[in-house]
Image (tube, rainbow, N blue to C red; front, side, top):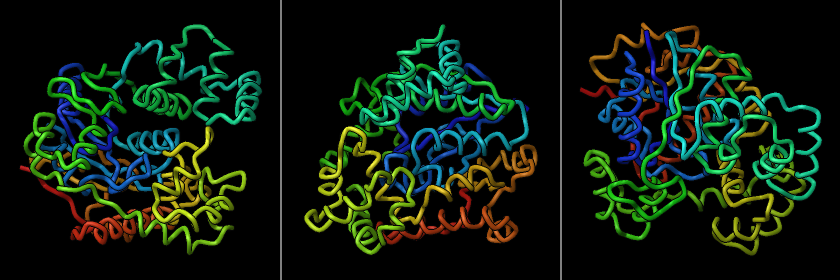
Length: 390
């Protein structure tokens, strides 16, 4: 069976996402289109604008056949782990698989050449990377500088700059490094970029739409979204920042230091500055440096709340996990048997009961994330639920 795969957040689902799904169908013509989507918290360390079941339902209405949840430990991690976790799980599906994703610019050959150069990580590259990190650059910037200095043939530095290109690079790296039997299909994005907030025509970024909601301009979003997605937009952006601030106060320094990317004594700075900054935004702005970007700090502070430690993420990457089905098209229920491999689908509590210990621990993090989201938004969703869409 020819399977089209895509990795997403759909935070929220908009016309650009609809264009992408249509392009997958047009260019690949798959027999099934499977999406793996972040749950209630995202890679930027934020709450999703709508809970995962609504966003999954929107994806099915837009043309996807099945939506699987990307476990929270991967969904809230940096791009490299986000990509590795998603690709790992999608590789467990049976079928002739092609991973499809949006890019701002570039070609498939340039993408593969750049991903291959980064995957090899020669001794010279590692030396240059170490030097760049010593200069205080973030990992992403250090890798860019090191690769630019090394300049291997055929690379396209454009894949190390913009957010979607960086993710495309990480997806391709994950496939190359793991040896998964999976092709890639880059699709040039239409309209605004990932971080742009001003719409072009009927296309706006998810970030732009979230900002409009935050500015009480919800009605303006309709032209950028399918109506079924717009109708579920909240009037205000959800937040659990106060709970996060409490968790930072209550968590000992030693435990903070175990969080991924919380290095170089950052736990001490967090403990010192939290006493003079009373909101999460204020704290993050006070902590931010060239190396510790606001997005990185947002992920670290969220990981504290969700009790996600760096070692645990690495163990999850190496362990047998699960495929939590958030939504599926009613006439595609056969995919549950057609695509099933060794990794179990989860749709009911009994499915989770048979998981290995590490998979159970990973799944419990999803349950905690769901409970916190429900508490913060006064929503009732059941972790053992799958939306069946007509």
